[in-house]
Length: 288
Image 1: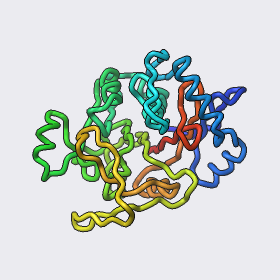
Image 2 (image 1 turned 90 degrees about the vertical axis):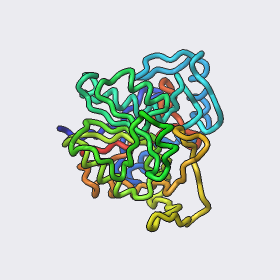
Image 3 (image 1 turned 180 degrees about the vertical axis):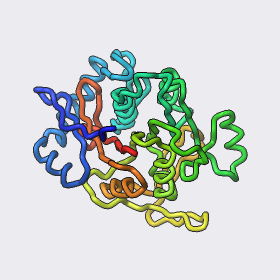
Image 4 (image 1 turned 45 degrees about the horizontal axis):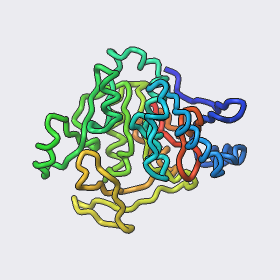
């Protein structure tokens, strides 16, 4: 199967810009040719038109203005269309473009979430879908609360080899103590030619990832002030961030068993895809 390597795509007025990158150098060169992506005016245009006109989506179709919600100024998280933010909608639209997704009964899909609007949207589309959440072995109360949702540790899932065509992961890998173990296990359970679509907080201007905490024999040692993100599966207990990814995550992904790994940047007025620091969102697209 041909590796997914989308080239730069843009409309005449640059309303929709999408390109994929294998390195910081490629991204830096691209950004120098598209300086508007760093300007507040473009971000404001995307947000304003989404609120006024709604958005379009390959997965969702047309979403009217009445189903747009602006929850805050962190647009990657807070510009909601049908309850889904830009990073989630980018993954859904990339998934929709995969030829295998055309057969909703045959695609074997694993999502690293089960209690979110995105998981609900996927359940309404695909027959062979596994959605999971995480709770530690010691947290019997959390496991009981999640039942009958499968509880899976993506560092050691126990799932069969070559079981899935696509794995979708939204802001999960930054919370994993052993990233390499999680990536190796993800590669193992994907079929040859299988695809990992993932989002995570991304230091798009830096080569090196930011290691914030490590787990040593099960004990967390903080290297930086602790950072936590909300946990949809347990709103009363936020999830610790172990690392924020930089571009050096791509060779780690390839070393884990993927044939190709790239970051897809997508900025779109019509689709309402933007962040707050830059007028677009990044998605990992890795092929087994």
